[in-house]
Length: 375
Image (cartoon, rainbow, N blue to C red; front, top):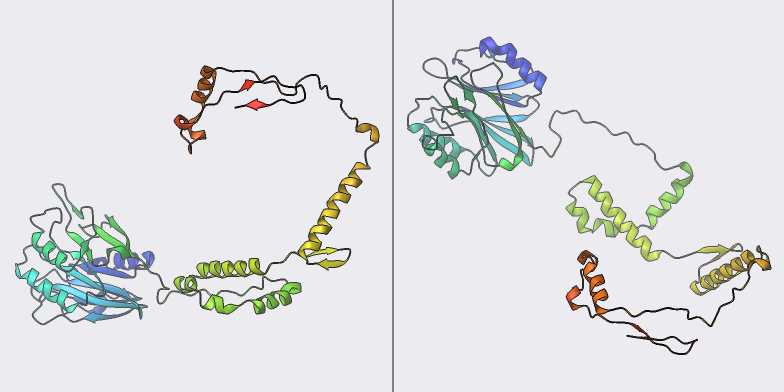
């Protein structure tokens, strides 16, 4: 990685990455820190003891509180673990791991040993070049038995090392809190013959070190209404708000808190709301008096409107009582059935048409001024 130091620094700084894990950095125990240091990041590394190549390394942004996890002495795996603390209630464990393609079977025994050191009540994220093809169900059997035992889910879904003759998924991410990972990304960058794997984790609180924007208090209440606003606040029974379970359920969500406060305010305002009308300079509240005054108002208004029209414009129309006002004709059952069959069921969903009683109407000749219907 020494010959690609500038590329890594550019990737970290310009992409604003919080944590970056590298496998096979090819560092020795004697390699100087200056060769791997990048401004703004702490470095945690596990170098190969014998031979060249291998190893694991983690870059953690220096604004994040973290500590390196110490493994038991018998553990010889090339892995580095760090516990990152964002707040008193938000922390997680990162483990960057490299497994040699020809690793012995005791790799899985030692993997269990480092998992036993970790507190799996916390969020644990394990990632790196495992050199176990996850698409090979037989080849991944031993690894999957261990990850299942610790409730770890594998998140990478596409091949991570692609050659002219093969496609393998050997760079993997495991976590016991898969619901907290927003997305995973699989990119070919040219820095390595393996794709680079990114993942983003959900954050519900301000990240440490991020600049906090101070909100400017703006007076949105006009000066001529501030006194009435203050009086309205004093009249409000704040005990209902402080004891409201919905407020507790909002868990600090300001929008929900104000929704519940408005609901309470409207509830009290509806209960105490009284109709008041000023009539002839006097404020009237009594319901009976208000009803009487409103009745007089509408009657007088009609009288005033009538006076705007000339009497000649209201001429009575003579009614010819020799002709029946209604003309009803007999219809057949077939016509009634045809009309009902043409009705759309969607217009009468409540009552099935099969249960509708069909009634026929006949015109019955009676006296001129009295027409009756028989059903």
